[in-house]
Image 1 (spheres, rainbow, N blue to C red):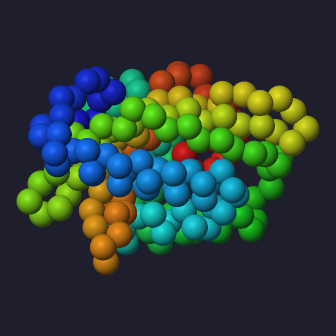
Image 2 (image 1 turned 180 degrees about the vertical axis):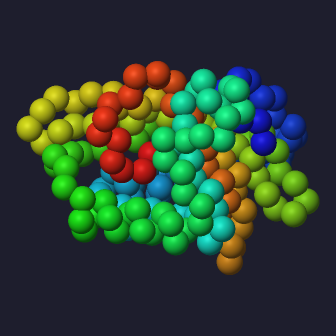
Image 3 (image 1 turned 90 degrees about the horizontal axis):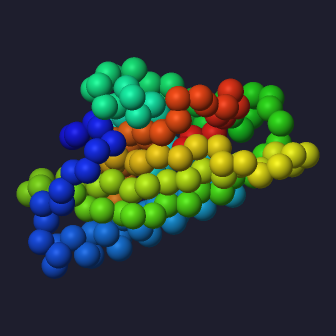
Length: 172
């Protein structure tokens, strides 16, 4: 999968891409609803057991560097992070709002693996503070079906800014 933030042409005919795009948009709606609703412990359920989740800077992605601000291998690691966020870590209360657009289906292979890209904005409102644009960038995703349900095999969250707020707590 191309790790850069640059344009990658879609390789699917429209008759295959359109239904997959709609399904991926529904996936994003549920994913964002869980996170925006504060149900962070549901977050790992959107991934297969051996999935990879990485949050990294655009510069690292363009240089094909594997380093990430957040890196989780496997749903168990994601579960540990989610439980730590929801039950043990202390931070200022906040509301999140994910906005996902520009979903593009790049490819779908015979084994059922679907590659897609989408742009995102993550807005954050501190309960006793202003609303700010917390993060902007792209999702570079690989989906598979598990028991007929679309799940993430890999999610690279590639953010555009070089200066990041020090309170990136929740999954993106």
